[in-house]
Image (cartoon, rainbow, N blue to C red; front, side, top):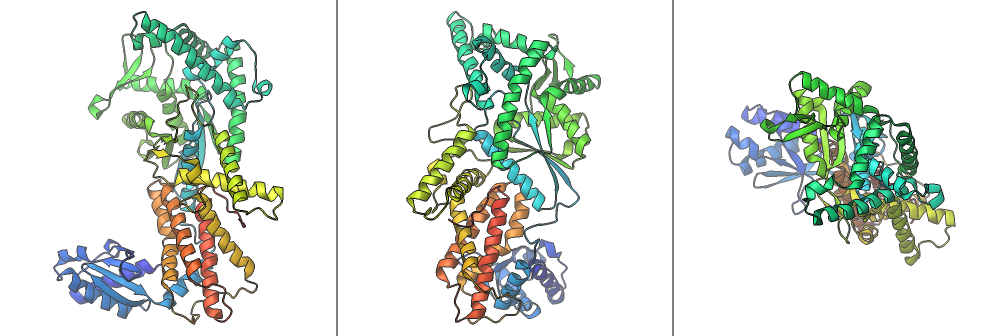
Length: 596
């Protein structure tokens, strides 16, 4: 039963060979879920067979349907709608499927990626500002993709790159030096990333005021950008850092240390970890070596001002600066080096970068350069590009200090979960510890699920109020559905093991069939999510599974003593559904409460 689709394809190809003398590869026959408006469990698409001139699609389908019913004991009946052959399974086939699948401890895993190594880089934050809502989407997508790839058998390595040097970092350092207060996260009671980020915002305000004054004096916006005293000081600070100035390096280490401590706290709170951290500061020099390699090969050009560029106009890209005229590096310089490091460290078959779509052009250039340098790992590079996250109040801007910080948002979601739980009277009899644990799971589920369920390519609007709605397309709704399966397990005193061949007192109801078909699709969706690098597929599957379960839960009496075989089947169905809901949500980094 586990290989039912393959069985249908093989039986169909054998029948086609016997009936018409035509050879067809089994995998070319498309078998899909039957649409809700038609009767059936699975549909075989007949239209492609018309190229063999076997007759009109309805005629082919009729003969093929009768042939499959005769050859496969799992097929109870069939019907034909134009060029679609709808197949209905026997009750016994579904009972067998449930018995086999629920007893398979590894049912929720595939093996298609076995032997393939994948490195996933995320969330790659800068050390000049706190983690915010945009980073949270990155983290949810990156960590979910890692779990999904792992569940498909891939050997996955999560890594994180810290953009820990350069102009933006120098801006926070300069603003802190200018303030002259010698404040620290400890003295101000702020988390380290928030503390350093406030100085980044302070620099932006100072620079803007100076820039506006220069523009008023006749400069263009572009001229004024680097002509302000504050920006000149930042460039000087960056150059001192690259030259190893002891005082600048000491301050840099101190401020970055504050940020790393805060990042570590947030990562642990979100339940993520990394096998390795890469640091821009440790690779930028080797990035320069890669640029020199390209220069020697004649792929790059040294301009009159001393900068080094690559002309990609023939590849429908632009000319890209790889080293500035003063010898300092850019993001792409260090990315060239880190790409090589990953190959050395892991010998990966595929390297995935989880980065927002504002960097689409950057990665096109990076991948094209590595291809031109004939790096063996260039073919396995992939940019998981995702859309930005907006709030009902509008777009977030780090320089203006209008971002919603990750820690604050997590606290807000947990508080909202507490308020919702109290309002619904769900905390009676709970200890404070249990209540805090429940609301933590609910709040983080609301946040993570809402960020995961949207196609990564799409820009999205995050609405905290909508995300916590227990009746909506939300994480808490799915969690509540799971707790119903857990409650059934607690209520059932004696569990009768479901075995294949059990005779039900009733025929399968439509709600049961719908739920069984949804369960059957789990491995297919898991594979699709890995192939398309889209956790959204798994997130939406979890919702559809929870929705179908609730329809079954409300429509069919599960624990009924007067019909023990039917009750055993329905309890097994509910239990297996709960298990796959839990596994689906675990892939998104979401924990399941046992009670709500």
